[in-house]
Amino acid sequence: MIRSYSVRIIMFSLGFLLLAIVGWFFLVVANQVRQEDVAAGDGNNADVVGRLKAAIADKDAEIERLGKMMQTGPLFKDPFLTKQVIEFENREAQLKDAKLRSKIRLDELKAKAKPGYDTLERISSAIDGWDQRIRQLLSDDDGKRIATDPILVESAAVLLDNKKSTREYVINTKANLDGLLEASTKAAEERPHLTPSSGVFEDVDRYLQAAKAVLEAWETDRRSLEALMQEAKGKDPGTIILAEAIKERIAARDRARTEAVAKAQSLAFEETSKKLADVQAALIRQKALMETAKLEEAAHEARIREQANLVAQAAKREKEALIQKYENALPDIKSYLAAFISPGYAQPRGTALETTDKKGPMSYGRLKAAGALKPGTGGLKTLTLIGSAFTNDRNKSRFPEFLGSDAEWRKIDQAFIQRAQEMLIEFGPLMVEKGLLAE
Image (cartoon, rainbow, N blue to C red; front, side, top):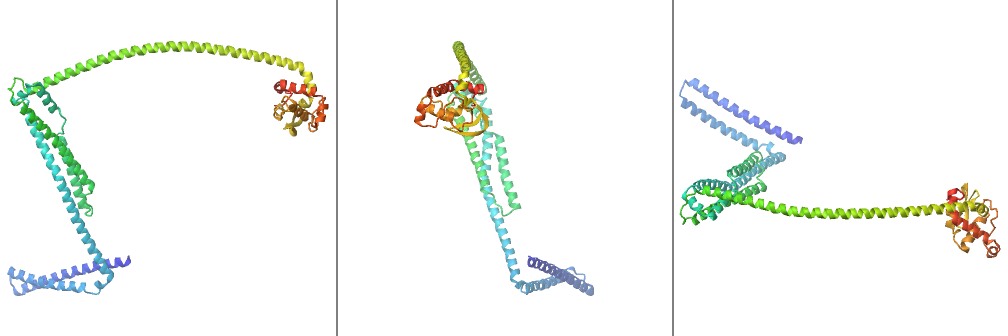
């Protein structure tokens, strides 16, 4: 980087030195000529100019010699400086090439756009020709001939009613093409390495194709109009001009359309009225069905409520009867089930017992889970093992002891165990409510 700056400083210094030498030579030449003129007293301007040119030529030769000497001097034998000069020349060559390619590409774009401009001019001419011919046709004999035939009048009305592109389209499209060319030209001037993109060419081509389609539409209508006039050529002109015939035709068409719309509306109203009547009848039927269903549902709900009430009353009576029976059996419950309802820490875990940290009656749910409430010998034995277990820290009262052998089982008062189990099965949930058993 430092070396590059040094080279630039040297090159600028050499340039200024060369300019200074040239200026000095011109001053010397002018001074010599002036001194010779004064000494000779010669006022001939032609001689002065001639001597001045000769002196300048001599000094130009001297300057050229100095330039060659500088180019062959030791400074220009430096490889780095030579490389810089070559790179500068290459950049200059590349810039010239880019400008040339940009100009060629821009010329191609202009050539691409020219058919579009030509087509727009043809469209303008077609519009002018059409307008002029239509103005004439609306009132001349050719138009009167067409006016004698309703079918030809209808065809003429259709042609006049066709929606075609107008002069505004021509103006706008030309402005768009101008904008594309101006933008591309300005870009090429500001940045020579940039050339019009393929997208710009595609835009120009789209405008061209659209303009061709517009021109074809105008040409098609022109040919149709000529064919219409040719068909009416053999007819005699009538008294009505084409403008009046078209106006009347349009009015008749509007009346027919209005009548058709009115008729369609009438038919639609009738059909809608019929459908509305059908819908209303259906709604009435549906409402009747809904009322019937509502009544049936209300009756069904009343029956369900009545049944539920009966069930509740029956359950209440059963519960009251059970409570009464429980209260009557309470002395036996306390006598037969002391091993289960007395306070204690032991609770069933399977057929064994575990000590808990809460003192209270035995758990009805655990007894049931252990199988102690299952009818039959197995359930009775399980109930006896739990109630008589030595780890049961409750007051066992009359509850018999049982270690599990068949011999012992035969000796036990099985009727006592049977009665205890029956009371647990019958009154167990109520005993939980009353607090005699834990859940």
